[in-house]
Length: 369
Ligand code: MRU
Image (cartoon, rainbow, N blue to C red):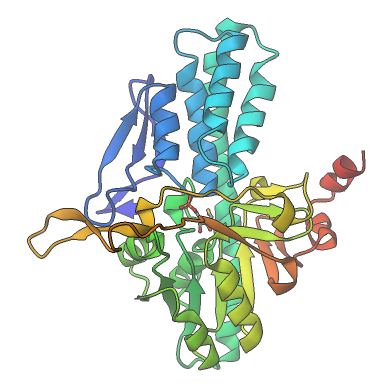
């Protein structure tokens, strides 16, 4: 996507070739800065400190982390160390494991002297594939929005509610949940987005609002508890969210608060869709509530908040009284029965094993063997 007229992806190999550049998402929306990752530790820290975040981008960064790790030593032991170090960065988004498994499977059979070049080739492919996948998700999701627009007989606007940031910043480009919105907007369909602020880290208020603003998409930031009220009053035509891990049975793990939006959508008859690239499907598990590890992050993300003062200084302040403990569950699981459909790169399906297998029949063979 364009930032101030210049096309960007969220991650790219530096022109000198020995490092990787990212957008530092902890500094948005007030400062747009890029950061150079020079080694394995830089890549691991960028993921755990959330300079990069969003399931697909975490996977892409991990792939490049392997490349950086092999700079001076591409031995089996070094590859194993890099795999373990990156795998330990964040527990919930399954794209991390997907990318690391993919890299290790391709690199291990090669002689060490060929590994780094092969790693860079594959990391670049993973990024290109992600862009293609997200673009296709956008096309399929745009068709859903287009049908809602047709039903309005050319009046008003299609109101979409989204949670957290599943836009281009969460992927390599386009986004997952936001890709259909960009495609609909670009096709001339009038779309307005309700942006959940998404406490505690405010990815909606900071990142989704920034992205939509840059692309000229009409949007309104709301606090996390507003969605139910809007849905009761007919002000949401469709919810579209992303996911960090979706099980083979269609249970959806996403940013904390997603489940409550799905319940509200169910109660008000609002369609609730989840947009996901296939590397976000965990074919090894069926029951999301039981089997998906939920990340718990530092309590200071709840007790404190960062923002810009009227003087333009970005500062962090404390919200809670001294001594009050805070809990910081980063994700929740929405059972498949509350999900109207899954928007994948291969089309839209029911949130169920049968639905997913109708689009990904090769996985039927794998899970049965
Ligand atoms: O903790 P984050 O910012 O990495 O979480 C990302 C999300 O949960 C997003 O909402 C998104 O839906 C999944 S990534 C496309």
